[in-house]
Image 1 (cartoon, helix red, strand yellow):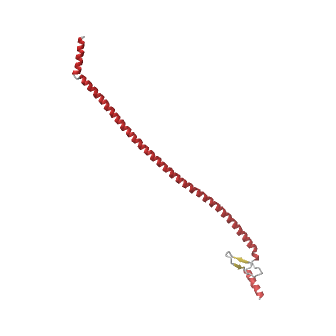
Image 2 (cartoon, helix red, strand yellow; image 1 turned 90 degrees about the vertical axis):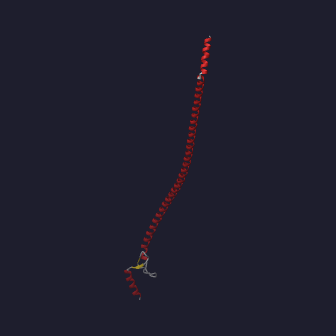
Image 3 (cartoon, helix red, strand yellow; image 1 turned 135 degrees about the vertical axis):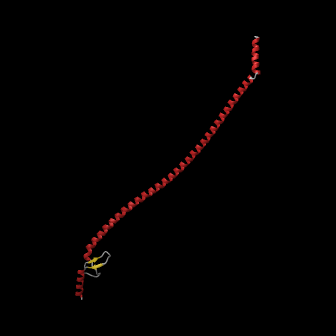
Length: 169
């Protein structure tokens, strides 16, 4: 059994003394260091991605808020113009209604005036035999009344008047 211990001890001393064990630990240490650096780099990249994501999210939130504010302004403008439109439309409807009422009333008044004028004309025609061009005339000689209101005696009546005037003298 001694041989076995010697060979084990030789083997161990060769590993320890020959640099193999140091190389193993050095290799292991470098591997752990590389893993830690890779992990740190991953964390750093993940942090940068997270920061970029947060910046994008903040920019998007700002854009959304700006869009909401813009939409609210547009809605206010729309409501303002809609209110103005409704006021103008109501005024137009009222004016149209007032105009129709006025037109109907004036047409009724005009028709009534036409009837009155026609009736007055008929009455005047009926009174024509009783009209005379002289105020004090009892003969009631027919006269022509022009549209301007001038009273003109008819020619035949002028002759009769001349004759009457001659008789009176």
